[in-house]
Amino acid sequence: MAFLFQKFQEAVKTLAKSPVFGREPRHLQFEADINRLFLYTRGRNAEEADAEDIIDMASKASLEDQQKQVQDNIHSQIKTFCNTLDGLLLSDSKNMNELPESCSQTKATPRRSGLSFAVGRDGPPSDNSAYTAVPQTKPLKPAELSQSFKDRIGYTLDIKPSQIAHKDAGQGLFLDGAADVGAVVALYPGVVYFPAYYQYIPGYPRVDVHNPYLITRYDGTVINAQPWGVGGENRELWDGFCITEVRANVQGAVGGSDRVWKLLSKPLEAKRWGSGQDMLERRNPLAFAHFANHPSKGMSPNVMVCPYDFPMTEEDMRPYIPNVLFGSSQEVKMKRFGSFWFKSGISDKSELEAHVPVLKTLVLVATRALSDEEVLLNYRLSNSKRRPAWYTPVDEEEDRRRWS
Image (cartoon, rainbow, N blue to C red; front, side, top):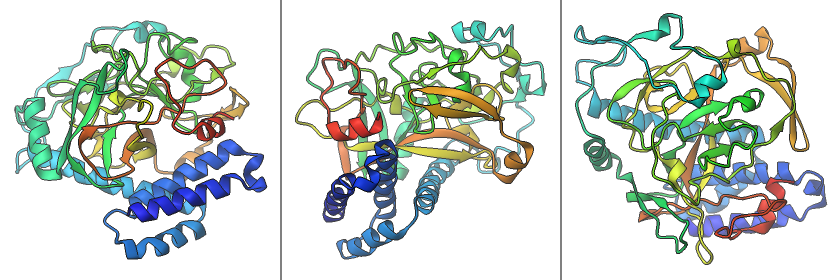
């Protein structure tokens, strides 16, 4: 596999010099990342003899086909994680759709945060989602669940002081066990914002001043992991309003990995706030991607960010996807001009009906075989603005293309 990926890296460098792609370097980097993810996830458990065939397949497949294959590969892995957690947490005779009579009807009343005040919300949603049966799960502590998960999958995650040799490194994310190249090793938790709702991110417009747990997808979707913190002790209704105290990670988990672009529009009305809470498993042993640090000088990243669109039709998997959507599930169309986003309408009914509703999330994928080590992610900070002292570019050219 090392031979396969070394060969691919050479192909990416050659492609990057092509004048055909020089006019759209940002799109080139997006294609390169998808191509890389296609190889990593497609090449899992592949033999070296298959390298040429896989590379040839990658060179011939369209970007759309590669994205679909990556999505399918990631979804398959996450489905295995969900089935494993179901087996550990639910009784053999029960599943998420068969709640025991002993389940209590719970009305969630989380402590209000600045986010709830920002959108003018006075309390829990007024619809039926405010009262939801909480499924009965086995009373496993997070550490117990994490160990049992490792026994079945082969790895889990741990949060402890980073090994990065810098005073601002803070807490780091560590893989406990062994994972193959192409394996999903962490999920990025938190509240998901479409570009139309940037103004509701706590602290807007300087959202990253006191929050190092923000990350942005290529499509502009922002995920704020600060409310998730280090998870919880059970399965519960969660809406992202509860702020969990997190021990400072000064370097910024994935805090500067992607810039949050400015949004030029009037504040949206609070009535556009979405449908409320979701039943999430807060003991999820993989929901800690926001603690991954950037490698220091002389070190290399061992994971990369991968977009994952979770299909909301997969109801049995939903508790293990550690994200909630801010605002309406009806996505507002946005157009990007340079560093700015503008509203350009609402997705029409025919478009919505033609697609399976998804929750846009992110996961971390191993770029080499990992074993009992710290998880390191290339933050790719923009080189157009001052970067923190601890940041050493992994690839200055990739940083430039990402933010061109």
